[in-house]
Image (cartoon, rainbow, N blue to C red; front, top):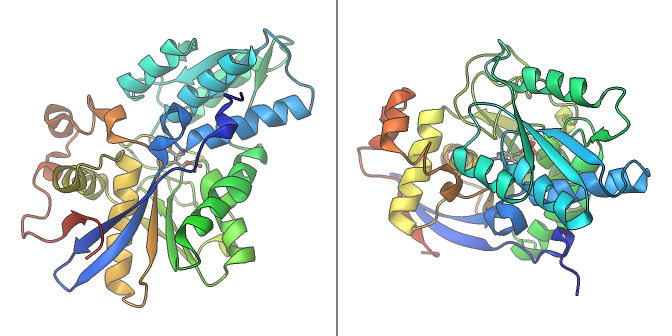
Length: 332
Ligand SMILES: Cc1ncc(COP(=O)(O)O)c(C=O)c1O
């Protein structure tokens, strides 16, 4: 029986009713934490390793190296172990302790950079380290989630069709968080061709240069980037929305408190972006939020009150004091 991550079942799509000041919407949350290895990046990891195999660049015992903010590291550690490769995750001090522990449990070696990149994060330092480890090496190979076309392809061939199938043709907007841009580019390529009526909205954080613009400090991990996406083109999205980290985390915490559904910070950002978009676009009736991972990976960071306060995000502890929106599991 096959046990590879590529044989994963569809992840669930769960309806949540949102009561705003102005009315009620039903948003479908696609919970990517139900992928093997706990996130959307399981799909990307399988695509990236398949691409190395197709090009004959890996063999038993070789070491795969990748820069990761957490989820891809866990997924690549798992896929590498399944297929007999070694794996080094180049990580940074902001990586969630739970995700670091997940990588180690799956046999990864961690290589921690400590110098921030002067562009709001550690990504440029991590990429420099990956190059040091792989350039000219015969026993190490880089999957390159930032430039390998297998990243968006995994979502064009997998996530996109799965979303459309589950929504039964009724989906009129999809909200997708952006870091490398691979998920958004892949989903957009699928929807532009097969369901061009569906709006595609990218979700980013201030200080990220994924869509261009100047860099700035960022506190959330997984969403946002210190380098411009190599995959995104303007035709792929109708608009992109920047969500302040406080609003993203308030959405995560309120959703968890009211429905028991725990999503990570980028899922919170996507949810907050969708609420903003729905208020401005009442014609959208069937929105879907792609939630990349689970809040359970961030108990020591975004779900920890002291961490929030220490990172200047105490505002997320008292979300929307006026009452609305109210999240209810199911449809109203
Ligand atoms: C936490 C998180 N946010 C956002 C994303 C979207 O990332 P990308 O743009 O690199 O596909 C991912 C990808 O899995 C993720 O794990």
